[in-house]
Image (cartoon, rainbow, N blue to C red; front, side, top):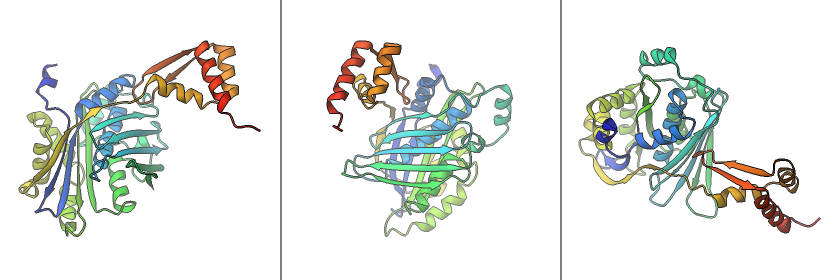
Length: 320
């Protein structure tokens, strides 16, 4: 409790740099990522790092418009983790899960190896074959969706590639989640630098691409953790150097874990099952349990409740 109380709350900071030639977004999400990890089997180590980096990427992606926006990010690979799914909102709310969170176990040997490396690699755990999919929901009639194929399995690298190729926005994106020797989350932060339309910021982005290459951002985050400076402004100045001298903050908002699941939504999920499946539940198990992938919430339904759902399903079944 003492260490956590010294850390600032999770935040998103949107700003402009280099006299408005580029936009900068910095997000910190240590507490939110920690809560997501705890809700999923007390997840530690590499699965927690994967979830954290994906959550940070999702939050950064949800800041591209001025409107209320929800972004769903899916990184699906052929590695043992299977993939990561994140829902992030422009308000700063985020939730996510790893498909197979227990597939990579954190032990003393892995802790020793990771401590000797500048940045934990996710390539083998995520896989290098698969897709990165992004769906944007702006509350309009249709959502926008795009995807790219996996190449490295490093989530932030893949999302940067997505922005540059699928959405064609010149971007630099770096995220990391740090863990201690026990594999527990100690810090999570990310940043995004992008050109603005007609702002001639390509040179700025290219310069920062070189500055932040490799494990540079991870080093910034490690130093920020040791110095107790895990706020977006401090991270921005440490990562961007002189490019942050003219930083102009547009807005800041809190980041938090949030899952809108409910018993009503769980019942709706059961209502999507076929008549045969519902009858089988009633006759053989006399109950059903729906578990939310995102928060681990469990909703149990009795035989009577299942029969009510089945009858409602029967009424809306098409004729023929």
